Image 1 (cartoon, rainbow, N blue to C red):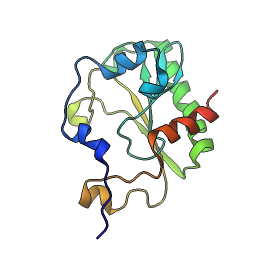
Image 2: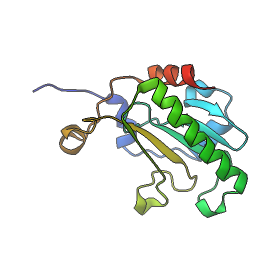
Image 3: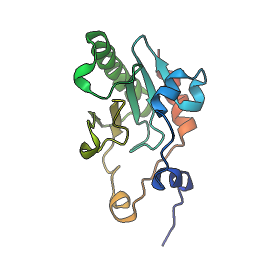
Image 4: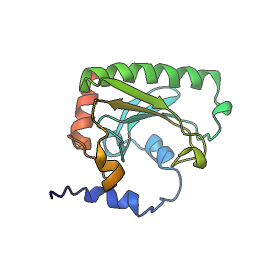
Length: 158
């Protein structure tokens, strides 16, 4: 049997929750690379998921700390939708996925890991990308590290 080690996931598995909002911290920082912020706009940011489901998994996050989808302004909604559409195109160019999952988990019981600052997930998908490892081994296998993913997305971002 072969072992695949992903020691970087231990921080996530142990469930240590940072104080404050990690999204607000990233939005307020000027170090985009450290936080994986690949785009800033007037109402939202696009950011790499630190614990991705697949390679290229990004999130579109409103700049304003809001946990209720119905409380987004029209401008925030438009920006969120426009950036989601733009980054589907960016991810197609960068990774050539065969499909996408796009969505929000609104509330803890819907699967939201961060409930009080909504965000849209854009998850590139390929045939066979979800094999037995996540189910049996509790491990996802990614062919690229986050720095390489950041560079590819950066290359195709406008």
